[in-house]
Length: 556
Image 1 (cartoon, helix red, strand yellow):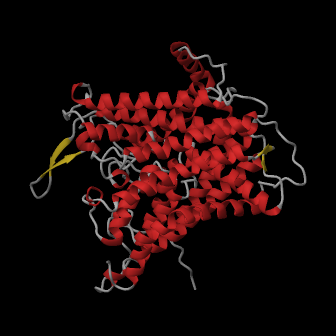
Image 2 (tube, helix red, strand yellow):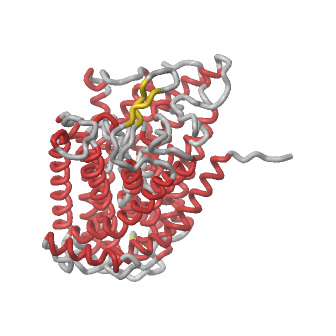
């Protein structure tokens, strides 16, 4: 008797295997690049790096305290938001606009500027009818690079803080930003952009083509510099689609190969940073422990979401129509691939799924929410996934150490009240940016007026908007995006500075080991428990209640 294996499990296993095999050498390369050692790209890119320092008057040898690092980061982010807003408002007067699109509306320009600066997505516009080629390439793609580079810089600064001792500095923000973009993001974007173009993703500057269909209608075929935008949006964790349909569009995602490449691109850099961390703290087992903890969480998401979408909708089955949940699914990929695409997109903060999120089953909706509510740490965004999981590691070590009577230390750094305060501030910024505004929006007319659904599904729609905004996975609310992003970054840099200033302690028999399967289990349990205690009551009002109602044959 033969056993049929669902192809999605094979695809998922191949994806994880490819990520693991490629992330290890990439992690080593990233560590060398940020530490200023020679790499294979140094001969080509070294002169460019030095020219940037000369032009911008950056002293690459001068390091910063965490306060200076944070100030430079916030100033740069604010300036990039203002520059993006201004450019979008002036779009009608800028070049590379063959469709002659007008200026982007003030509120939409502001929302978009904040969205791209905070590496979020789910833009409130259709790219093919709103943004010129110049805006896509010179404004939004540029933001994809610098916003991702900022996340990389914060993660590396935290790595240094954990690796150093008796020092006040954690690096130079301008140097870290430059190296992250120049040596990591740019080469990868070129490689993936070429791969996408070879698979048929458009890469041109032609005006849209109007063609006649077989029934005599006229259809506009979208073109443009799509492959280059696609590569950095996925690698950088931003996810804003060149067209409204994003990764379900036949132009942005034309083949099964591009679909797999997109999943791979979303996970590659966040996974590699786990191995970068192991090298920077001079204990590679620590990096492996984090990688496997994130892998367990990722696999759990796929294991829950995929069967739910394949099981379908009980209300549809009652009408005599059997089969999976095909509502909102791209016909080329179907429901079978939706669970994997959903988990990768929400775990990585990119959000570029090959389906319509609103059409998910309640369990699929719950998985997408939980992926974000646990901090998007499996594998998370570029940089943000690692500094998010390390905050939870510090919390796990502190709690576990107190429970078993061992010294709360991590990598020779004693964990005291100051460090825990910074961790709690970083973790609290997330629910504050979600729960409070969601509660207000659910009871005021302005918050419910734009909902497309009623009952529990309508609450899921509203709650997803705020969750994804704070989690760098959606661009619904600008304030939630800013609090969710920088409310975590500033305490993270403060944590890096606190650890860097501490003297390093030698490991003793009383030190809790953090490189064992037991600690991986403790870390996963802590992540799940913290997320559950914070968000399950709200989740119960949406997808959990909706699933119970569906089983009873009702929707409200």
